[in-house]
Image (tube, rainbow, N blue to C red; front, side, top):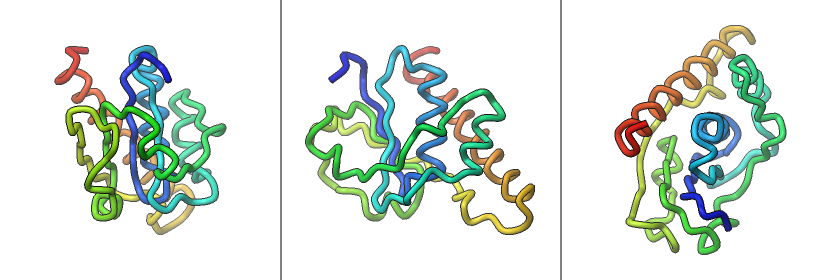
Length: 147
C-alpha cells in the first residue's frame, strides 16, 4: 500500500461519475493521493461517453475498469470515502473497516448515463457533470489542503 492518503469514490455502477472523479483527482493531485473508485453494483465497462468527455480535457480514463466495492472493504486504509450518487449512499456499508476518522463525504451528482436525446445532447450532460465534479474537487482541495 502507498504512503499517500487513499481516496475512494463510490457510486452505484462505477461507470461514469466515480470514474470521472477518479481521473480528475488523479490528474489534479495524484502525487498526494492514492485514488480509486468502486461501485455497489458495477457495470461491465466505463461508459464510452465518460471516456470521451474526459479525453476532451486531456485525461485518459480508457484503461480504468468498474470494480466492486467489496474488493476494498477491510483491505485498504481509506482516508476519504466520497459517495457521488444517491443510490450508493442508500446502500453503502454503514460501518467501513479501515476508514480513517470516519471521513465519509456525500457529493450527489446527476447520473449522466440517464441523459436522453441525441449522442451530442448526452455528451453535453457528461461534460456538465464532469465540470461539476471538477469544481467540487477544486473546492475540497482548497478547503482541506489549501491547494
